[in-house]
Image: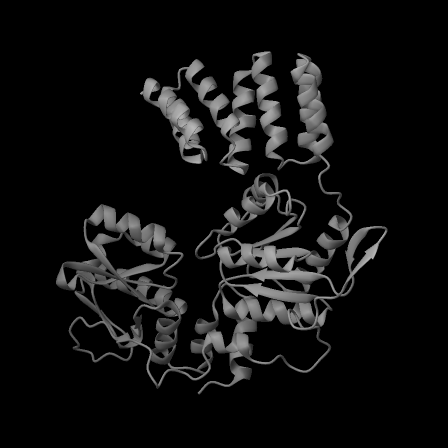
Length: 446
């Protein structure tokens, strides 16, 4: 059994380093690797592997070059049964590279989840042993003459009693707290006919790591916020719709729906366009990603993991202070003005109005669509394409923009792109008449 104190200590250590909670539990001696492998198996729904008791067939390493194994954290264990057996630290994060390995090798893949720190050590040791001519690498607890063996672990009654999910459900430590859903929602009151929510500000914490969710939730609640959590992208969108948070603290790498896609959908919906978003990531690092997150996905801030909890709190509060008074729908009257000017044949006035609308709300598909149409009429095809592409990225079902794009691409000789736009329009069309008209245009183009 693992104590709550040991798990919380490991979770805090994981947050302040480039590691994970299971790695810290193993390094501290609080857990055996086999028990952690069983806990990971229960969480991910695939077998876990105790690398310390395993013997790796080094012939399998020929299917994955060492730089790929080190960069993507995957380790071939065996080719038994004509399948490539791969150890990974996160099945979700490894999905892309596993698909590539399957394509390159032509082999079916069997996945096993392992403790991250053990995986890193085993990757280095296995490739070094292979370079020295060894045929088998054996973990420190495996017999010295053990044949290739995968020490798989599955959930059982002996799995550690306090799993990662248990940590989320554990009651918080004493201290000033505001409950999230149960008691901290506040009351609605009407002031000058405008609904204003009294009570603590709400933060939705979205992360697939239970330990990070819990620690960030506790830190925010201690600071007086009402907090709810979500473990994947689809749940995050549902919680935003149901709960109406004042800010979303959003992990980039999420199951079911990527964090960047969650941000895009929030920005493309007029009801949530002004909702502040702070993106967290352990994968996408550097100023270029931060700039892209702000410009393309509307993130107010971008925090790299591992982070200091006090710094995260400071930045959340700063974002709420600077965005709390943002007026929604600032682009709407400018879009209406631009449309009126365009209908009257005043192309220059229309462009000016639509450009101002985009400056007011860079995520208004209507403003971008109008700007693209006005630029097309002025003869600036490529600028028009850029605006229209952004419009349909924000609102994929915007058929008028897709149709104009198709015409522009065809005009400039990009026949395949024109067909792609029409095909997208056909799929987006709701009424049969529009769908048949677009399908006819597509067939004539093909």
